[in-house]
Length: 236
Figure (cartoon, rainbow, N blue to C red):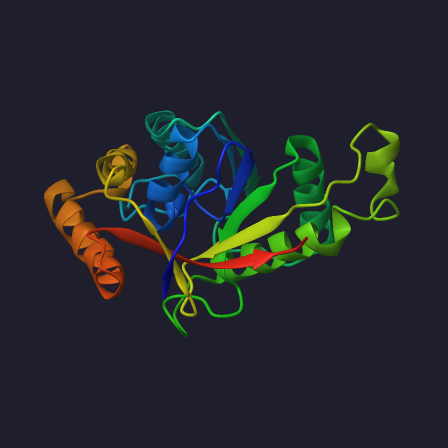
């Protein structure tokens, strides 16, 4: 395991399956990137409308609430923009239509660095959320080679979305992570962002304690106090 710095003052995009995914796995690193001058945007593939145990809950209302919570969480982290694709929660499929949509956002936002789920070595092994695996795979395919290649989705190019080459992809929620970022300075903002997801937080104190324990465990092998872990793919 090695210590790495967060992205510097470059455009960054995170693509995640659900509201609160980035808070769980990479919010401390994104906050450090913001502090270093990066412009960070978030694309959420679903609105998490299945995320309620309330027997009276309606998916549309749950999704609307979770979008509001995600927007507030992003503000607490200092993110520039949040967009929602509103695909069905729990039913995301690896389709050409999804790849096309992700390519369009990559070409629109033009990140140097993209964060997404690890689809090949997901954490937890065997029981990772299916939406996480599907979104991570589609995001990687959108990055390479589709967003880069002029003849991929040429209607986008004709419409003004020029091809774009992402330099790095940072995979989170990875069982194969081999690099960590020190998040001691941004851990409190990570927790504050997660607590913006009020509908998903029955016990805020317990959440803070368990997340601190996880960040401490990731940090300990390299002599840090709190960390997040990644696989970093360099494409240039």
